[in-house]
Image (cartoon, rainbow, N blue to C red; front, side, top):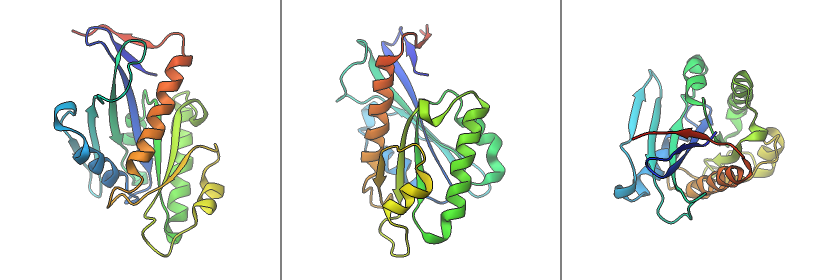
Length: 203
């Protein structure tokens, strides 16, 4: 749920990049970080595991209209992709407002994508949430490769919520901001529907 900081005049949203290992989550968030104006973003924090990293940073977009008279700040996270780090995944998605599910489009990664997608549902259910009640966008990554599923096939295989889907190449940045814009629009729209967001009286 969106967290409102009255002292700072901000409404804070948590966006999590979810998906299987080496699917493009880290590359996507690093691309976003590189392209955002330095003056409006926080430090990129990296928590290393044996095979992957969990990343985090926040930014305050200057081009968005205010929500309920408040500026919007987005906190972007990645979850570790390896299944053995599921405890970390659960911690990362606590309080999530929106998810970018990054799927690896390669044919041989289908089982990994399905595992990560079902794991996302299970972990959300474990904390009383559902993808149906959050902002959610499917980011079909590695579209620059040849041995890949079509976007239509990935929709049928993974997109059980009928969420917006974006094709991407995280290495070049193609589609990355489109996916981020889609999920941010969704979480902002949901704020307008909520009657009682959480408040944080921070100084």
